[in-house]
Image 1 (cartoon, one colour):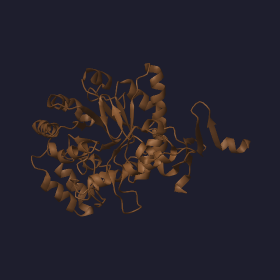
Image 2 (tube, rainbow, N blue to C red):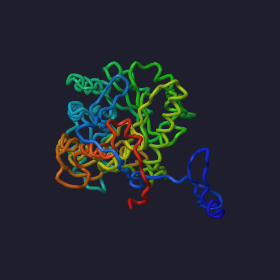
Image 3 (cartoon, rainbow, N blue to C red):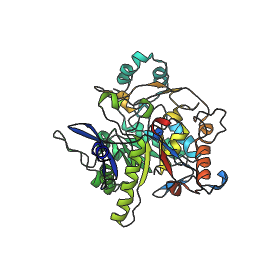
Image 4 (cartoon, one colour):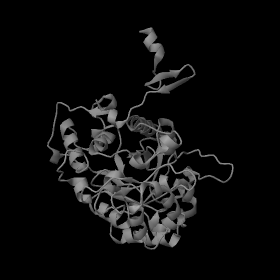
Length: 387
């Protein structure tokens, strides 16, 4: 036993396992969503009796779904459609909709590009500057439809365009990057001071990605209303291949949920929303993300499969457009049904691509919980590699 414990150390303080990779390096054992499974309880309920609603600040939504700020997922039209279905669509304010008056031909072109030419052409298309007047126009279009207005900027562009966003009348503001920290350091320019920035704003801010306890806790201390968990991208991200960065989502969500609990004690009860971002390609992963402690899930690929999606069955994110080091690519996700069907069914295949909310209701009913917040307490088991 002592020899086993010498190779797999248990840190009581962190309550996590460390594995000896080699004599000079140890690594923490972490789990993906494929590695965990939900365990039914002794009490069950009817799926119709559970509530799937969630709330961030003063804004309440019928379902815990956020449409990712990706051009293949969220256009002004699909943001409006998501809002009318009880979800939240977030428009990428650095995307094609704010670079071009009519991006539809370019969206069609990207969808039709040969795989070996897609990344270079995407870089060329996104070299067009973002136009502040188009930010205003797109956000006004969403507001005029009577749904919650949300837009996203990268940390690098936030200081440049946030005043335009606020003047246009955004309800929720998202700062989304591969990795976002509360302590960014730069020798070349004054970095974004998240705490001061969020304090000065009059709207709730969701910020991320974060993938561990410490980073999430620091973001919560800035006053963020929500923290994105993960590095986004999911099906279209190549961060592991290009820069070696990866965070298994089950462990990341559980770590950030624990940071939320400790921050509630520290702040006297302030609750920060935990939002899983990326890698939710099927409804089972979506449900397990909530079971691990997320309040809502940001969906990319699943919504890119909608017939209304602006990507025409193709999917790509901000990671693909970087001018010198793209960390993502365009991929073919196909089309499986209308947006409403993807969220609410009916499904005609047992592949987890349709009826995400029906799957959530069934899982909550099987574990006996009536709302998403309590569903976070459900029992799970570790089943490595999907066994």
